[in-house]
Image 1 (cartoon, rainbow, N blue to C red):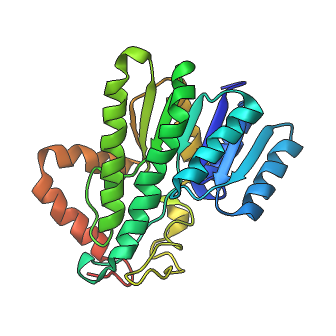
Image 2 (tube, rainbow, N blue to C red; image 1 turned 45 degrees about the horizontal axis):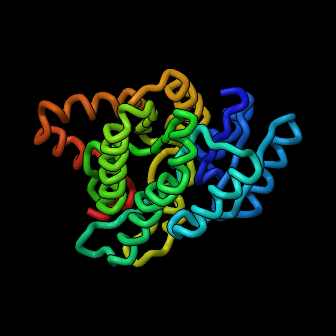
Length: 267
């Protein structure tokens, strides 16, 4: 990874921020993108203070122009792009029956269209260097989660897009990695949107028992280095994906039972 130019979206917290520190440690040059200027400034300052090479660009990935501007800023500063990590994402928690469709659209805009926009504008530069496009999906991209219809839909869509992109570019040596973390200790559940679009504020799960975002970043960097196509994390995540191939109806029941035990479950 030394000397590689890496774009990380959603870099202000969680998995994205951990990726920033992991790739900086490996000697990569970083463009960090997110909506929070304060958090981006703090992260880049810390990286650069420790000998890293990073810049940031305030970006709302749901807006195509901002994605393009961020990519062009990367090129003007570093002159190339080797790796794009589509990590920016939001979640939601509500049964579909009560969900305001504007919430559904917002989740799709960030999680799916954000990755499409960034990939579209960065792809010519990545192809030139036979680099990598990474999509941070989820176990919810393999198995629909009740109470997370929009989130699951966005991750299924993301995986289909990236898989098709990989096959389209088989003869161009484009590396496409789809990484599916299980439940990860981050802010995503605290900021998850409820039926009316208001953030829920508190996580319904025990965050400390989950895989850390640092571990996810470490596994991701190794998978990129080995140019893997797919990576599913956590034991429960791998078991869920495996069993769902053979016993989908049974896994439906298991998932329903597991998710319904969350405090304040919407179903």
